[in-house]
Image 1 (cartoon, rainbow, N blue to C red):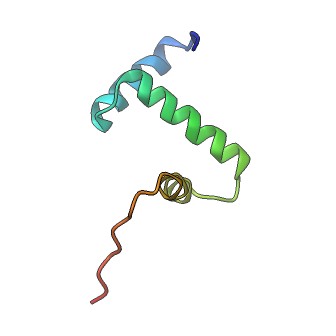
Image 2: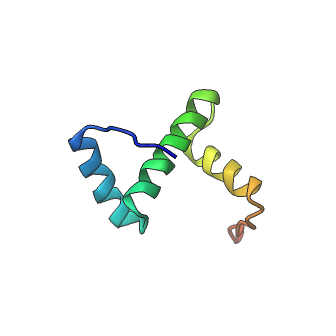
Length: 68
């Protein structure tokens, strides 16, 4: 574990986003870094696809929408 120096404005954005997403500031920054790494490694995938991929890898059972 180490320290990461980030711009004060970016830190404030992480603080605001963390409150909305019910995460700590560190957890929010870690989420953004992880999604950023995944996006760079998989440039053809959308954000939702990246999240679904991560949930599947964690064996999270996703609810399926009901078809009318």
